[in-house]
Length: 81
Image (tube, rainbow, N blue to C red; front, side, top):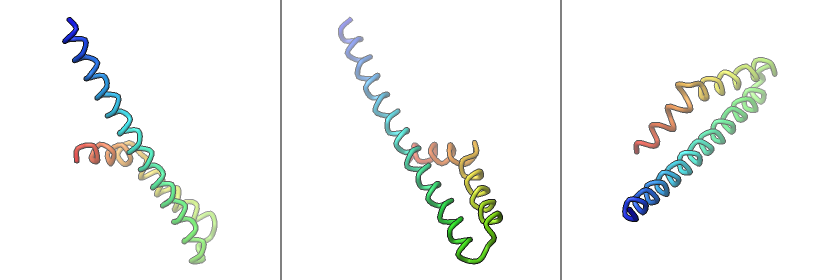
């Protein structure tokens, strides 16, 4: 029985490491998207785009990237590499 327990501990440890790696990748991806949305907003303002439109542009980018098909799909693709 101790072999089974040791194996189960090994698997649990590997699962924990994999979970941590996924959390880190998702966090990195989210921070990257935040920076891009902010840069989009700032650059749009600098180019003379009105505040409300610049805000909408940044929001459209954010929503598109963080929707179910955006952020989660990217993280899943990264996990396969």
